[in-house]
Structure formats: C-alpha cells, structure tokens
Length: 144
Image (cartoon, rainbow, N blue to C red; front, side):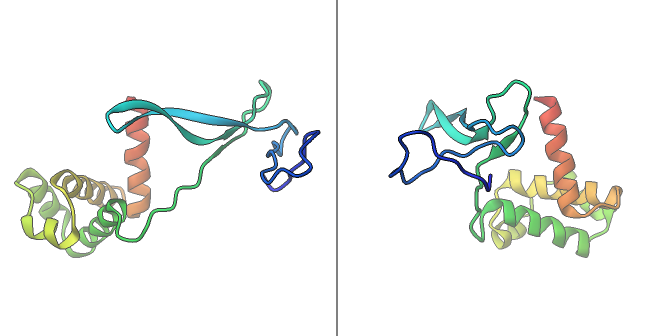
C-alpha cells in the first residue's frame, strides 16, 4: 500500500484512496461483525481488493500496549517453559489454578490455563512459545 493515486476531484482531500499493488484497483474498506456494548456492530477490520481475480487483503494494524493480557499470557507461558518440567505443567493444568501465579502475572483463570496449554504444546513439540500460540490459533480457526 505504498503507492497512492488520486481520483478525479480529490485535489484537496486529506485521505487519498489506497490502491492494490497487484492489480491497480482502488481498495475497499472491509468490516466484520462484532459484539460491541451488547449489540452486533460492523467494525472496521482492514482493506481488500474488489477485483475477483485478485485476493489482496490488508488487515488494520492493532498495537497492543505493554501489559495487555496477551503479553501476560505469552510471558507466563515462556516462564513456565523455562522453570518447569513437562510433567509438572501437566499436573498443574489438571489441578486448580494457582492464585499466586494469577496475581503475579495479572491473569484470569482462563488465561492461566491457556498459558499452561501453550507451554505444554511448546515443550512437547520443541517449539517456541510464539509458534505454539500460532498452532493453537490455527486449530481454533479450523474448528470455527
């Protein structure tokens, strides 16, 4: 999306329409339906090429601030891999959530369990935590 071109009559417009780098068509705004404040709403999710021959899609960039739950889950999963054996992680997952870990890492019980699952997958398959998270996301996408 580095190249931009103006439509006729866009001389003084602040936002110039983006064009597809593959086919040169103007990109269209893409929306997804999400639950916002208890109501289904259309939320901007990115840009896509309207051409039937081109499948170019650009998702909106979302920046997570430091300390968001995603970072906490990832960091806790990495710590679990570094400090525990596979047997210890499986035993912990089978039991109740550890209140001390949840307070220290600012996690909910579901996030705590998800982090342990990520750590177990990473250790069983000799993957990094990032690769294990991608595996879990891919599995969830296939189930949906």
